[in-house]
Image 1 (cartoon, rainbow, N blue to C red):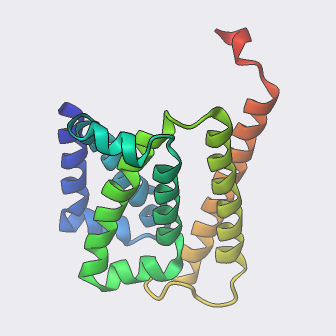
Image 2 (cartoon, rainbow, N blue to C red):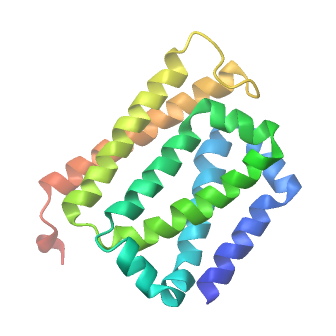
Image 3 (tube, rainbow, N blue to C red):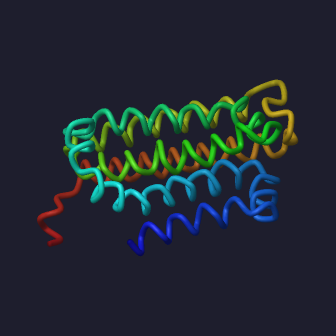
Length: 185
């Protein structure tokens, strides 16, 4: 119950107009801080939903794949530059951003992650690595401004942030591939 309230309070805090305006005023902070914090809030709130509706999660997300697919769809949607722009221009999209990232992404992530095999978890990380490399190159190499609400410099900064994250994910995947965890237990 404490996790639910922590996640709920995090969503409320992130929705406060001064906080939301501050986080959304810088493109990389909007994409790499506010949005992941909303997913984390949903992740924290998920435990209450899992306890209240265990049969729903068993039936709907028994092996974790449907939940992780929903998570991936929501995250890919909010990575699209047009989605970020519309969240800043339309109140309804801003509300959908808070709802979808916390409820439709965070809750399925928590329920699905422990159900996935190590191969499934690594596949999700590989998908994110490819997505981050692609988005990084798109934001850096695009000859035009992709988001109307942000400057070209913000776009370049976000692109380099995506590439840096992708490189870190590659390092993690190499670490997981070439180390034996039994030696460190």
